[in-house]
Amino acid sequence: MRLYDPFGSQRGLERKKKYVEKTATPEAAVSVSHRFSQLKDFIDFRIGFESLYRLLMDIYLNFNLHLDYSQFEWNPIN
Image 1 (cartoon, rainbow, N blue to C red):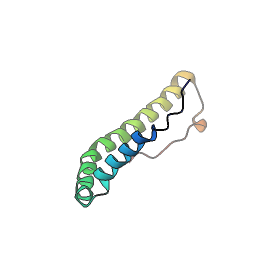
Image 2: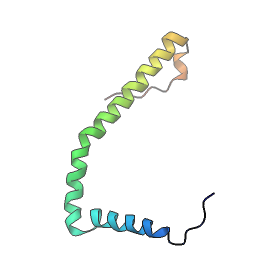
Image 3: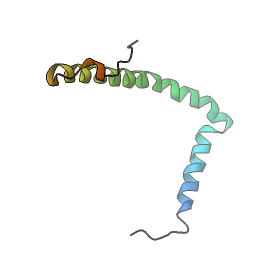
């Protein structure tokens, strides 16, 4: 059982302060776009992987479990 900690919100305030320093200051505004541009390739990879995984699972379910194609939601792959 957790007891109420009246000073527990201090950790939340520290996290918020760190977030504001990393994103809301004028110096951080320049670095945020650079940090996210480095993540763009990783995000694209994850989206492609999840789309391919879903497509392969749909094909697997159709061929091995003999489910009807009309039950699947097909998304276009770019």
